[in-house]
Length: 53
Image (cartoon, rainbow, N blue to C red):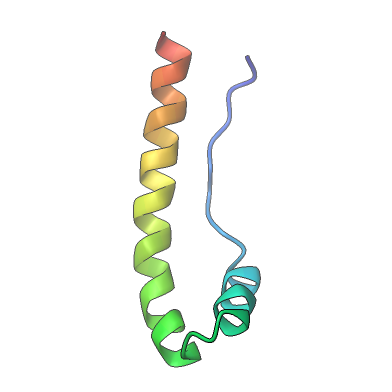
């Protein structure tokens, strides 16, 4: 398996998706970085665990 890591999200795409879903852009811009940080951390933990197994 090739080692790798998730570094982050494409925030432009995330904001465009939020806009398409009708989410207030100010709220999306405020919340997305926090959500991204948690998701990146969890995805990297899962990938690391699958390498150890």
